[in-house]
Length: 475
Image (cartoon, rainbow, N blue to C red):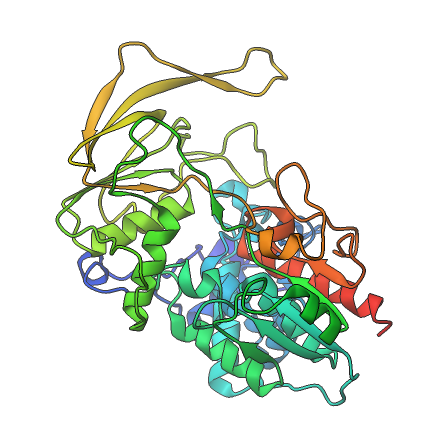
């Protein structure tokens, strides 16, 4: 497997990012990519370890990482691509967006030198597209079965792709103007340029998938009609209801959910109309982002590119240490301080800080009143709770506030009611071991059933739902 002892001869090498000032001047991808020769060298570092935790523990799709790396090291690019596509429908998405759970589980990771699996995956799929080896691969026969997929995010696309390759006739319904869901409208171009999404959608169309856009299922077309027309339905609408912050002053203008802001900028880059809502832009403004996760980082990178005057990101959790925390031992995903490319571009982070109220004038926000919090466990086995720290109150000037505190569940009202499917206590769609809802022939996948999660899990859920559909249809 790989080259014996190569991990001792070659250091881990990440491609890094384009220079800060260069990438702040546009919305193109920030990432560089290794050359084929560099990729093969990095692939040689993969060890012939007894238990490949990257595959068995780390990867949500079960990618056979060591075998793929070995093929790349030996220059067997086509074989590596075939093996990768056998477990992952869209490596071009995961290689750009996944935080690389496989690398956190790598046997080399405790020494800080995990194999560069994500970069190798990106090289494999891009080499495949360049060589014409990535498709199209339409099914040789059709089963005559028809399946509708509601939603075209990573989970819906994965379900559609898997079902189509099995010979089903698949129609994907998307309420936006273009397919892709959060890949197209939620994730900024500097992380995922939209030609990558468009390329995959075109390939799926060539393979036989039909996309119906600007169709809001539940209002433009009834679920009952789809249930009659198709042999099975897959609900893959994501978990798009944002978590709100109900504190005094929330009604002031200038306070927006993060996704409203990000969708607008993605539409600007793509040349699409912004819609009827009020334009949200950070140019010349003092911006405060409430929430320290990936969405908050996306807002930070976007605000900096829009030439915000100042950007502060509030995070209620305490600042992690630079090294792996003892509560998340290898091969678990480590709790430690992470800096996205956006954090290296500007702005500042305020840890252990929460907002108490908003203040403004003439109906517009001008200030956020904040305080520091302390996290403590009332008992060793009890969850940590936070309390305000007296005397730490402060105020931040703010012209634009972006709420990036995650999502609570799917907006399933127009679908769940007419069917009706069952929702759990969190408002997620209940499914069984085959991802089927309480309604026979109706399945749910991705964040709509799982809750907000990573792209790798969304694709895995879409594949699993498609397998459930095929079992239901007896194929």
